Image (tube, rainbow, N blue to C red; front, side):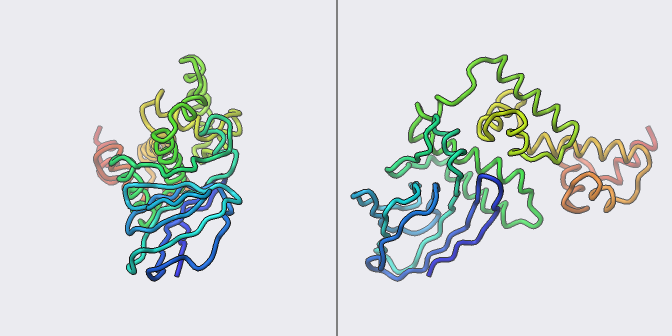
Length: 271
């Protein structure tokens, strides 16, 4: 009846592609939420009863769960529904929501931009191979954007205040990534004593791109340097530099330079 396919499950956050094929009618059992989660409805329609209130949920809305919350799901139609569920650790919720690990109790309206981003996230997760660091950062931004629409004051209260502080934070992340591009967002955040959410948002505002993009940019330029030195084994080059495989290396180099590794090698040789 209910199938939750894990997209990524990593430190502090899990993304699941959820398909419910319950027949029409009242939900059979009262359930208790086991985690903090933000759930985006992609297809279908159902009624969620929680905290003494009913909410009709469709693809224009998302909803949140908090641990221990009593809930029941009723289904007015027989064709099921599909959702994207982002499960969050309490510390991550607190960092996004102004210090309190409590998600909104009422449905969250999703803007066209937010809806598109959650669908793109699922589409990217189905591509093989996919970059889990990029998906983590995109999911974090998606959650923050959705919650900011619902409770802007709470989300805004956790942001670093001064430009100097923000720039120092971004510079600290760049320094760590220059030493080791494989350092994950949670590891960077721990080293810099901030939350992954704040680090991701500040980095993008200062540098103009995500940490995941910066990581790939560093790897692409390391690959270019190796090509200049005459490296010809692209599979080994991809493995050495942290790409998923040779095709991933080629895609990133094309994205960054507009051309292929072989064309780059030729250009360097004839320069």
